Amino acid sequence: VQLVESGGGLVQPGGSLRLSCAASGSIFSINAMGWYRQAPGKQRELVAAITSGGSTNYADSVKGRFTISRDNAKNTMYLQMNSLKPEDTAVYYCNADVVAGTLDALDAWGQGTLVTVSS
Image (tube, rainbow, N blue to C red):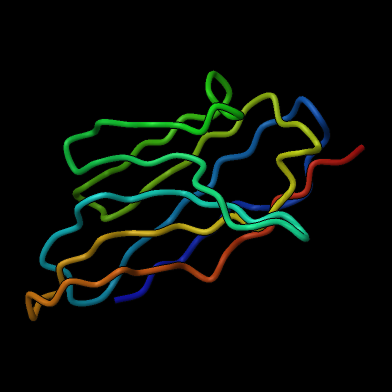
């Protein structure tokens, strides 16, 4: 099972980016999915999470600006980031609780995508 993020890049403050996370491989089902981020010199933190049923939760720092969503048919998760601030600069990682085709439970992580918010 592999998770691949895309959509990171350089954006000016106040701008927007949309991150995607696509899961591939032998997948039976995907339960909760989430976006984490790690800024230089800081610990990795949860940004947003979504259950298979679509329930969501967000870090206080991104509420009202970021929106997490998923397309279960495509095994893909998204993070729409609006009104970006310099403090949102970080490497963003996707995470998923995957049940593989072998019915093994996996805690899968992507390789990360860099988001830089700067003028």
